[in-house]
Image (cartoon, rainbow, N blue to C red; front, side):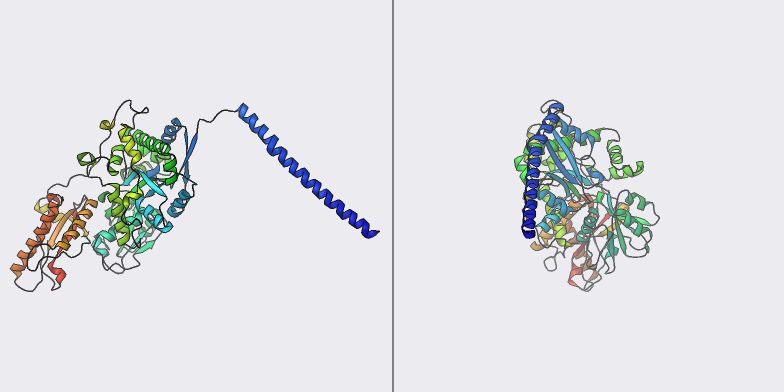
Length: 521
């Protein structure tokens, strides 16, 4: 009897559980199919329609150069097109940024060209395409050192020399520019000393041994602060290079394919916002300061002076849509990607070219091409009304280097020797070998990256033999190289040829060396 009662009790419990489950399911169903829709309908009936029909998410870090993207002017311009802009901030983790794009978490993002190349190489593919150039640093990043230890870049050509920098940042890439472009064969494998941000590098510099062979790579406002320290000098800053430290806007390829009109809306909204701040007195400085309230007025001015926000016509030029004089001396996107790739390869940041030379696969020019065809102008809110392409702000070109006097050439401050392979000549003559002509064309590209440097071409010969004959041969070889570069487009005013005293019996001493210098400042 007892067992029978227990069995009935157990069955009763099961029935109760089953009824509880049924009731729970009914409750959920009622909420899902009746209560929630009823509440949603009530909210809809008593609410308003959104003014936005689309949302675009753009991922970037807090670099001041991206302040236009975060601006109210940018959001306002997109609001006219019914697009809600959501900025997703990160800690400059470029690999995670690229993965977020691939996964569709965001539609667009900002990269430097070098960071995009490295992140894509790690991922094994490039799920994005470049659609616009945002800015180029023109002094916001700098390599500095104490004069007691390092007077010029060439003083870093020792096994114990190093660069203190922030990894995976424009400062690291600037250091790689130095390593790849200057002749530093003795620089050791452990040439990078990592630190966490420009502020941390600045603190290390202030407490460092001033006689040490060490350079420090900073960005603004710390560059300006470092210049005020007695004995600190700038070895190289980003105002002296061109087309290398460049920020670009990229779009997820699927989004670009499915929503090209939205991508165009973003580009046009950005162009209008940048045009607004560019034409407003102190506009960029005020924007940067509002974007980072910790900045002083001087600090924001230093940052603005070190960043060149690209205008519409400059974007057309970078994407190869305008030619000749209208494009100025701006490098095309294809050339910039190629040049950056070469630097990353030479400094072992990449094992191989991830694009296999197909650099046009990484950018999309159709949006800008359509804008140009439609006569887009950032001052016009209505397409076709108002100003047109002919009224666009022009391309900003490099200041042409003037001709120097003998005394000015003598007073040039040496920056360093360019990393050029030994130039070969036919035996006993000044005729350049065919293989070396290719190297001189590569040198011309390097000079394009350093538009503000003068070039001293120094002919060298062996110390043995007739000294006067050796000197004449050195002079004619230097002149032969100079003539080749002039014919290849290098301005005659920035070249000087001379002979150096013979000091070696090695074959390399019969060649020429290339030293760049700048007017003291």
